[in-house]
Length: 243
Length: 153
Ligand SMILES: [Zn+2]
Image (tube, rainbow over all chains, first blue to last red; front, side):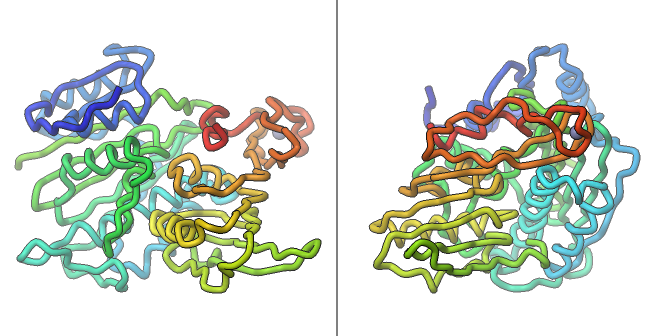
């Protein structure tokens, strides 16, 4: 049974392992949960153990699934370049001909890049710097870093902005609204529909945010290959980094 | 979404009624101004290859604006089925007549789509179908079957 989220910032940094649906995970995230692994292996799960080790480290090492050998990094300086970049990424990763996979990857890349451009940067009064309905050329120092790579096991995607404004509370309330308030999932806001991160989380196997408040945000995802993918195996991690 | 998959809407008369074919990417540029408000609507959605979050909102608002008209979806592509599952108001009050189910070969990784006519009572997709590509392997549903059919529950 779902209860209205009571965001508890002190819930941070606790590792929760079990077998959940993404909907159940959304409730935990809305309540302030930061490290949630749904796995049949419990705390012995390799990914969960890695998260546990990371929680004791100051240095934000990548999870194992981020270490794809042929990973590329591309800089993106304007909204107009994003479709070219997405097409190039799917070709580079050799998945262009694989329809089911490329649809997922295109969706994840597009939503994360769009979020990065239109939500990461603010004016001095806190309002959004770039309007969603405008084509944007990012200023020096604002370019997004888009990383991607593919292996037999799956696909890695990450998008890094230089704003650092994506809070756990924002993610949790968006997930909660989308999973539990299905008559009212969509936001009528000129900056977007409020569905983007939910769509990404729903599509991917592992979802991780590294937030450096006011400095940068890195959203990283792993999409497991079709032979490995299982809807009950997934993780959510939110690391807030001080320095 | 990708430049070569621009949203397109085309009307055709078939068996004395209008069928609206939509294709490409359903995104913020999708427009439905030409759709009439005074008759039942039939959408053929086989050509939709991607849907982004603003496209979902466009579509849901469209469904709301046409809530008094009977609406039918037919030949829904997997991209459409995924959206119906993620965002229930995407389907809204529409009746879904038929869908495509994505399959992949466990032997050669080839992909295919199997048409499923829900009106004729085909509620379940075949578990395995022979692979036309390698002619050795069997194709299975690409993804979780229960999740894929959640919209029909
Ligand atoms: Zn085959």
